[in-house]
Image: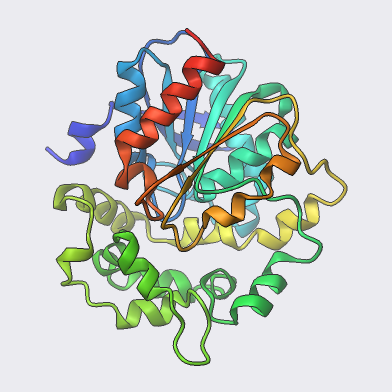
Length: 326
């Protein structure tokens, strides 16, 4: 049996918002559900430790493979991955489950999505937990233009705007790509240093230089890594990359919308050694989130719920126990 079968509840499927979402559900169907939203390039499987911890504590927990990923639908059109669709999927999942509201917890891209939910669907949000990803109000200019000016043309988010090439490069050797991403923080921090005169976070160049035989930098067990490798060998990376291709569209559509969060309990968990989403990026949040609690996980890089599962689960359960007592 694969780690997906032994470490996750049975997969279920829901027809929501024009797509089929695969999701994993555990715990009793009582109280406020907690919906766990993964990032790039990940899966609901990224939350395996938290699913067990939350369910064992008597919490109702749901983790979807989000659109473009894993066992869920992968629409062709880039516009089908904009914020309206991504948040709409989660609201549709609540409808499918018969839940009025949920606490939404998101990591990486999942974090960007869950911070938008109280702005776009306030009536469906009981609380928000950001893991590594802070709430970021709408910037004054197109974010892609900002990234290009600040980090260079080869910075991965800018490069991801190129049609077809990113998914071809990432998909050429999926095991190498996943080993490149899923590394311990020191290895990722070292890799993030740009070549002389080059772009920061130039994943295309970094991946080309990466030696996948370096076992010492890996934090996943081989059977855990195999779940990600097999999934992306089957699906490719196009769905996930399309989330990034909507940065400009999302920015345009957010014009004139509220850019602060009030009336919703929020928890922000940062990771001390995350080279991409640094703790400093969350320092502004008390100014724009009215009901906010913040904690930092020491010694963790970017993949916090997998690198430091006990700490992450403990912080979530402690906060839920105080803000959403059973």
